Length: 137
Image 1 (cartoon, rainbow, N blue to C red):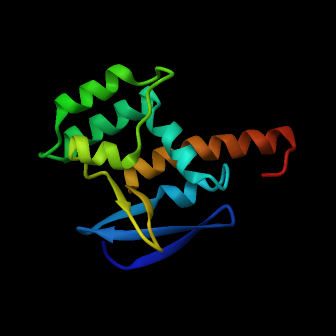
Image 2: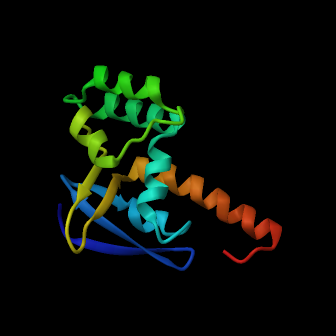
């Protein structure tokens, strides 16, 4: 991954890194809109059937090394109460390239801009609902 840069969204700072000339946006930073426990937000997002279908289609289109059979196994379990899926497990099992997990001090979960925008739309929708209700976001 390349050098980090920052963008501002609704007054929040979100990290963007370049990887193979593509922008990867920090899902960890986006998830902090909901709670300080960003890994729980990302985990819940990852176990959602619609999210998995989106990720699988994206990987099928852009990643020749994607493992569709492993994806099908996750897809069958998506939405079940006992189903959990971490970004690291997704990447390791399916050979996904749309999500990158970095360890260490400046680590986090990063997603290709297409995938991250999908996540932002979900969270932005929630922020807009709060504004419509008059809640502070």
